[in-house]
Image (cartoon, rainbow, N blue to C red; front, side, top):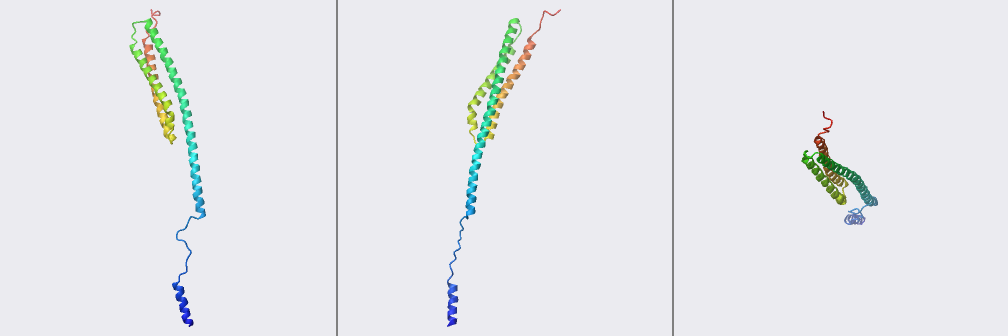
Length: 183
């Protein structure tokens, strides 16, 4: 009988499997949950920092642009004064001696006026389009765009200056000099 009972218990223990409380899919532990929260907080802080830096960069671009506008407008104004003085000098030369041909010099001065007008219009367009250039999320590309636009204005100003230098040289060549001192 003892043998029967023993076999019965052995068979029962083999057939009846004790229930195991182990979980097959483990949920996140508390540490992993905290890590995820911290990562999200870091991402939010990084986004805020990026936005502040972008705003600072935009402000720097605006300041740079403002200073360049002041300089370029002053240069354009000086060149316009120079053009008026050259035109006055040409008029004086024409009045003194009608035989001197000043058409080439006048043509160069009119070209200089045209390039100054181009520079002014480009500068005005730049002023109106500055905010649209700065709307992009990448300040680096917007700064490149602003610089390229300013370079076109500077090119017009340089061309005008070259034309005026050429004109001044031509005016000096027009003057025959004082005939009173010749012996």
